[in-house]
Length: 97
Image (tube, rainbow, N blue to C red):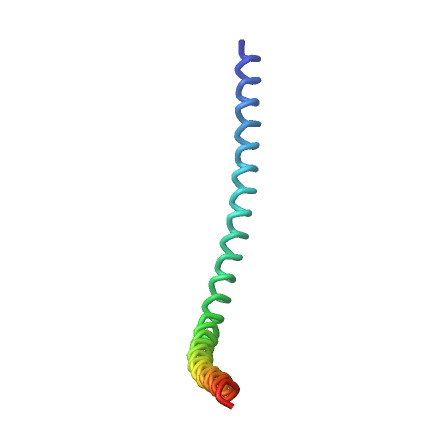
């Protein structure tokens, strides 16, 4: 009977040792993940102002490009109107001359 109790106690001890090893490995992995997350956060914080500056510059460039596009679009409309007028005048001159 005592032999069975000793075997059961040893089995429980081995199970506890196995659990302690797994918990220790899990704790080590979690420490590595936490370290990586802290590094990622610090890198992200250092890059964020640069990103904001770049986005602001790009917004200003887009605004400028839109204004330029509107000017080109207006010029194109004027050229098109002139071409239509010239075409119309040419047809009239061919008709009456």
